[in-house]
Image 1 (cartoon, rainbow over the protein chains, first blue to last red):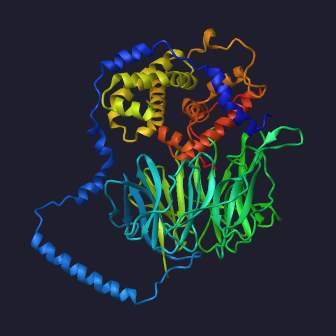
Image 2 (cartoon, rainbow over the protein chains, first blue to last red; image 1 turned 135 degrees about the vertical axis):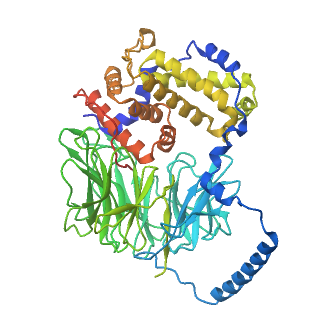
Length: 438
Length: 187
């Protein structure tokens, strides 16, 4: 069978040959129709940018009592100043970067504004609004800062602020390109960013104080995924796409490998040395890595060949960071794919996805949890869905799993009892959960 | 004048500027529509629909640098609308002789045109759209997902499945029919 990456590489030219692009003879007809068509005014789409429920909550229902309001504001400022003075005298109490923490606020974006909720069942409040389009926010591991994207001139820029939205500032000069990957460092002072502003992905370390980013030299390797290594966060696991090589039969292929990168540059990036698992192609093979809690092993996806199925079967492997003892974790039924591990805060469980393809019997997607020690296969939790995507994350305390089903609903799942409940609201951006000290 | 300037002029109602933009993009759009729909007449209708809509809605485009991506989105929506409206109509074999290259030099030995054509036809239209948007129009997957109004993970999983099925066909194996939608998330 044609190697998949060879096939993919030739698809653009093959499609061009198949379609033979040429100016069709109906262009004049089109221009005749458009010349007779009136354009919509620019303001006609303004409603797209006004989140209806939030806009409504901002509108006062009755006449504003300015005098009383002024007194209240003055009192609030006085109390705030006293609180700030009090808090300022105490050492800041923040959670450690790895391990369970207290559940804090939820943050997400709605039509260009950043919105928070104090808990799953509380009302939304606008944290950051205004003319700019701000979106995709995330809390730092210590819960004190934010990073989000802010659009300007049609481009998105990485922006940081304090958790209350103050002191917002751009932290990276280049706009964010496609396929960006941003991960907070455990020290909450910087981020690792894979960005491709010129179409070539590169890894950068970006301080949140805006002092300038630094590109990490990966010697020509193309980074895709990044995960900070516990327990101290001095190193990164980087999934890289290596330059094309030749197989024994001289056919080209693109190996995927994991590298451990010392972000201070004191040692050169070193390969974990896993099997290339050259089964499906660089966009899929050896994907979705996460660390074990002690930072000594890596869990990752492998597309294993499956009899009679060109798409193969996803399975989760565990490998030591030195590349030894690569084993497949106990898997589900043969027809079910299992992939995308996310380690629980206590390090004892992996949250994974189970799915079957649409041309298999009972096509579906579900979530499952799998013990990290490999002592048992995963058990399904939460709803079983068809034809929808599922985003998911552990709550900081590890007692719940938050899952967004399509754009329509968010459920809170008990990973032990496997029960779940709808939380009654949803968002087009998956919320991030703030970690707080216990 | 660069494309940005043309888009800005067209936004202000300059039809000559729009004509330049349309001339520069119509061959690409027509080819993409024929690949997605596998029917010349439907493709023509879809391109006309996308073009008229782009002229009508151009003043509402906030980011003029995204004109191409926006136009592609209009096209793919028009294509999928065509498919929905004409679902009962038997899709004719397209690729009239004049459009088939007469030379034998087809890309390479790696991908056979007739088999690729057969593989594309076997795909469900929305899957074909993903393949065409990504591999023919060169749209990054996040943009493809946005254009089709589906989550990125879904776009990736559909692309994964579509490539697997195309590869099976191109390699001469049995074509697997593709019903609705697989799920899962890919790298």
